[in-house]
Every structure is written in C-alpha cells, then in structure tokens.
Length: 223
Length: 328
Image (cartoon, rainbow over the protein chains, first blue to last red):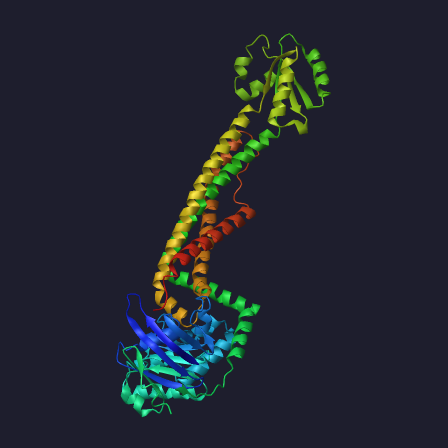
C-alpha cells in the first residue's frame, strides 16, 4: 500500500527531515508511526499525502509510483486516502452531515448515495443522531469521530492519522484506536502517527519508529 | 520488513467506478446545480454586502446601457428624417408656375429622381404663415416674395449622401435654378455628432467594464480569503482545482446576473422618468416619436455582458489567489 524506497526529504534551507527511509506496508495492514517531535513523523505523513514531495528515492502508493506525479493527478490519489488530523480540521460553518459528505461531494457521488453513505459512516462512529448538529456543539471526542467518519466515508484504501488521540483522554483514545482496528478488519490499510507509546504497546500492531529522520528498529515488532 | 495484509479491495475497479460516476451527465448537472444554489445561498446570507457589490456592478452597467439607449433613440429620430432625404430647388423669381410645372415633369423623368413636388408661392406663403406665427405680418405684404420651389425626392437607390450631392450639382446647373439645397446637411452633421458620441460611450463602456471586472475580482478575492480553511481541507481530501474554483465562479456569475438585473431596473426607471418630458417635447414638433426603452434582445445582451464579466472577474481572481492556498 505504501512503499518507501530509500526516501529522503530535504527542505529548502538544507534541513534533512528524512534520510534513506525504506519500508513496505502491504495492503490491508495496520501500523503505528512513532518518534519524538522533530523525528520526521509529520514529514513522512506529508510525503504520503503528497503535500510534500520526495527529494531522493522512490515512493509508491497502491502500487503506483507517485514520486514525480503531476500536481494535476494528486487529487485523484488523495481520494484513495482518508486523513485524520489532530485538530480534525472540521468546517464549522456546516453541519456534521455536510462535513462528512464533503469527500463524496468532491468525488461526485449522487445525492441519494451521499445520504446513504454519510449515515453509514456516522453510524460506524456512533454519531448517527448528531448529523444535524454543528461541530462546535460537539465534545472534542465527538469532533474527532466526525473527522474519522469523514475520512472513511468514501471507503478509502488507506487511512492516515496524525496524532489522532493527541487531544483526547485515555478512554476516548482507546475508543478511537478501536475504530481504526475495526476499519482495518474490513480491509482498510491504516497508518497512525502517535507518540502515545503507552497506548501503542497495548495494541498488537507493527511499529515504525523514527529518530532524527531515520527508521530505527524497522518493524521489529512486526513479526 | 514487509507487513502482511489482505488485499481485499481491488483498487483498479474502484478507480473505474469513480470515473464512470464522474462522467455521468446527470451527476454532472446535479453537482453544478448544487454549487450554483449553494453560491446563491451564500450571497443571500451575506445580505447587505452582496447587495452593495451587485449595486456597484448594476450602476456601472446601467450607465453605458442608458447612454447607448439614448443614442439609439436619437439615431432613430434622425434616421426617420434621413429616409425622406430631399432637395429643395428654388427657382428663379421670373419662372412662373406653368413653366415650373413643365420643368417638374421633365425632372420626374430623370432616372435618379423618384418624385418631384411643386410648391407654388401661394402654397409656400400659406404654409409659412401657418407655422411661423407671422400670419398677421404676412397679410400686410402686397406681393408674394416667395419663388416657386420644387421638392425633389431622389429615387430610392439614390439616397446615399454622395449621390444626393451629385444630384444637387446637376440641379444647380439648370438655367431655371436659383438655388438647390440639400435638406440633408444638418441631418448628416447630427449623424457625425452621434458617431462621435458613440465612440465616447464605447470608451466609457470599456472603462466601466474594467471597473466591473475589478469589483468582482476584489470581492471574490475576499471571499477566497474568508474560505481559506475550507479550501485547504477540500484540497487535502482530494478536491481538484476545478472543484475548488467552481463555487467562486458561480458567485461571480451571480454577481453579474444581479448587476445586470439592477442595471435594467435603473435604466427602465430612468427612461420612465424621461418619457414624460420627451413626450411633451415631441408633441411640440408634431412628431410621432416615442422614447423606446430596453428591448428584450438588449436586455439579453445586458445579462450576457453581466455574466461574462462576472465569470471573467472571478476567473482572474481565482487564478491569481487559489494557487497560493495549498496544504502544508
């Protein structure tokens, strides 16, 4: 699903955020990405999301080499990916329903189909009764779950989560992780960046650990 | 270090289904209708601010429209005279009515002449006293000082000013002629003045069109800034540039439509206000002339202009500012 082939990322100014990172995450796998802040977690996610471009090496997504993909085609790659952010990036001027519907609208789904899929996604995160509310009226945990519903609503091949539990208490964090595991069970690849080592150790998934832009103990927990 | 997974999903199929869905014309129309309505709703919610922008556009569109319409009316007025272009041939004083009648018959046979009308001194005097208000004074005259006049109307294919001029030359050369006068001269002068006015209005129109572009462009720029967060999020979840651009283009188009509508109301109101005094004025000239307001075709053109300017203005703004907003 995600394959890094000796990938390096150097920012303008010379700072090298990632150095020779290689790993291969298969379709349907779930993994954690850890490391101290500044270790390169965000950069790695941005490379996968095609927000930043690889400086050296090759990057494959879903079997496709996206290292030098044209910006015109980036949106179509991004539609295969569901993003979950620490601060969830919900649009506060529209309802929960409209927020979750956004990826479907972008992808051009029919009206009837949008309603059906949005309700299915909200049902999965347990927010079906809140579809008419505005995000501002929801708790932090609920907002994050709306973000998750939005990320999975168009059935992406890959879920990318950047510190999804950063603002949540341990109880809610566990619920969010359980949701990810549930999506993984139905075949979605999931990559979660988190520094919540306590929580990660409770779950039995491979861990990619970054330190100063390099992959350490690559997949040691994988087997 | 390969993480095993279950490739349960077939992505190629996924992609094709997406493409098929995108190309379906019904979905396409549905999406556009949705965005158009959404933009309209946004304008409505912005209330006064939207109205003010539309008003600026409306006034800018109303000015050249009104001026063109006035010009068109003037042109129509002068055109109605131009149609009956004629030459007045004043015969020498010693020519009496009978000789003149013979001459008139001769002239009527010329191929470039359509008709000849004879005005005897008696008729001329009577007409003059009726219209000039000098009837009392004229009654004191012992002799009729007026010559015989032949009103020569060129043949219908000879109304061109140059040809009429040539005819004037030939008529002047006749031994019986004292003076052959082309009645068209002042009409031609008026036409020349109208031509200058038209050029002037075109320049003003171009400048006002530019102003409309700038107003719409600036409004859309602000709108883009206000919706920055939304643009970022939609781009991040796979929106194409076309998708992000669309609502702004529709907003610009709506501004154009409402501006045109307002311009129409302004012009219509203005002409209603003018039609009273104009009616009085043309009444004094015993003319059938009535002030024409905006015909439907011109209203269509006005709306089209509004739409094109709105679309173009927003396109320029979107092109300049949207690329600067990329997720980071």
